[in-house]
Image (tube, rainbow, N blue to C red):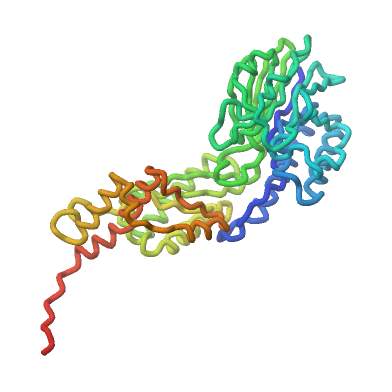
Length: 428
């Protein structure tokens, strides 16, 4: 039996723009997370005497701003070389051939496959051949898999490819190919990169995305790592995920239905976080994005003073986790605990406003009548990490109208409940 590690998308020293603006953010831990995850990978390979590492692209996030990132990667590869571990890699769209990354010679145990044609590396010690092709530029729109050679007989053939296949949500469709393109090639294992979530696309032969080794933001939530592959003498393949990340990103939905005040909020957050952290089964730092939902009287207070609500949540998270959790963001998807029909009845300004919002929700095109010029606002948002909503998308416009209604409902309820103002005599 022999083993190898399938790794991809390290994105070493990936920049995290605007991180310091987040209150309480563990800046040092997040900025050093990719380096520590890489060190964890090397430790695992050395401790378990895994003789081969295949790396399916995107070691770096882009061409490096200086040599420190390159030197750090080279040092870690030297650690592997010191234990006789070979590293076979291709470059992906983020670390395609460019002057900085090409100018530094990597250690002798690291073999970068060619970008001009499909390349093959044969192990001098193991019954394995690795086939692959590096990207020559950032955008590869050709089917690279079609250019890979036939499998070598009597060897375990690994295909190393950086691809979105026929498409994966959130990933550019680079090096497109079909599953049949891969399975028909005759290789025993396809080690894929580019998609940051772990996925076993096919078994026998195995077609696998290892996922990235460290999540860098909330869109990369969940456990991250690499895949250990054990090849038995009879040719059977066994895979196992190896978790390497040091900081975990987590999405947590919390139902606040019926919560009436900040004490109820604190209890709900405490219970939700404790359950989520218990399921995590380790003590790694966790960045949490909380989405609050449900019909609750607390919605009105959240609308009036959202900063206080978020402060209470962050204080509760600190208390629950002893600073092991950072609340990255709070999304308020609650709805007011009011009966819309009661407000909508009668001939009142409040009822007219609700009817107007309802009409807009059913026909968002009515927003065009307002002729709002958002060009200045959109231009200012370009310089921030805030994304302007696409008001040309009817679904987005309808959702914004519902948000506006829920924002106004607590205030409309207060106005509706206010006693009538007594008549004031005119001054003579």
